[in-house]
Image 1 (cartoon, rainbow, N blue to C red):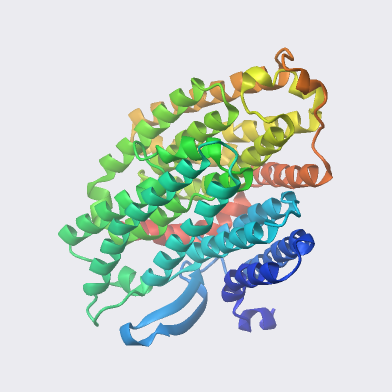
Image 2: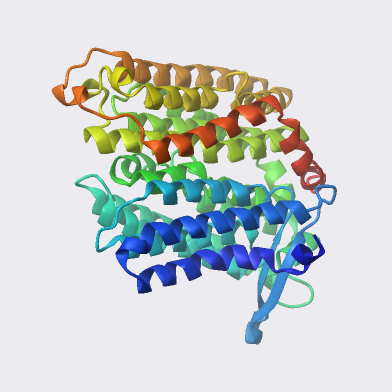
Length: 488
């Protein structure tokens, strides 16, 4: 244990995929899958090591790796985690590891594809660990580059290049208000310009300045969350992107994490003053996403709009600004990595076999693919918050928190959850138990061993934390208490 404490675990975690990507580019394509899997497993072991030395009783940042990066302007390579962020490391590792195990192509361009995926991996981990504003922004923007190429070159639809261009241009524009907020924060530090997140938290801005910072960050992060009506890129991406990219984008809600990590703690008074705005956006997105999901005939489109509804519920939970709301929201964000990520991976496997996600062409899928039908149902029920799955304690906690703050919004949560559930069950019934119309459905194969293994791991974790949710709550308790205390 002492040896682990002395190691720069967070730096190792972030750098490992970059090294793996470089090695992949230098070796033959036939070794690509092996290298990716080794990187995934090693990263998973390092993330468990982080959990082993992390003290959940402390609310402050721990395991800090720090080195001067740009001496002239005092910018540091500074990483650290607290109870809010630490569980996102194994969640990220599990999801990327699943993608690596399901990416089994050894074509000539496989090394480039794998290297881009590993760069995406490193940037995502960096977002969860960065304690310097410039470093956070670098990782935030760095995640866009591999996403663009992965979708534009290896996407599934005819409009994949347009979808990738829309996504990257939207996110680049969204980065402008984020950087503006960071520059304002840095310039107002009493000891001179500082991008240290801990300095920003220790020296709150005046209320007018907080209002500016909060609105800038809400706009910038709102596109990534996505908040309604800033969600237009999501359904397009869902239909054009690869299953792996969609699982990561939908499963790891880094926009909501940024709202929790930066926007609200750095502008607490402004967040309280504008709680109506956050709650209103959450309510609107929840209801719109659920209604739009109900109108879809394509499984990917349905999952995209359901994702909008579910993430809006989390935003609504955050807008309650009480302990239950924050804990339920963090719990649900962790759930997304398995539930949303698992659903997109399964639907991607279905598309590879049938060439479509239109329910009208998928009737009778359960007869030929019972394993797939079972896991899609399990993940869907978890997304609906059925007891016995990890979605239940998270959604129940959010609902109770919202009810104490906004009774009307709590009613919207119930309505939205019911409509989203109806959307999933309706399309699931048609796709897996409807009449088999397409002749191709008679020859499709069920999940293979790697796919079953990934789905089984996801399913076991979902059920385990559905039965023992207190493990998650204990890990995040101290940091969420400190988070709520900053709002007082």
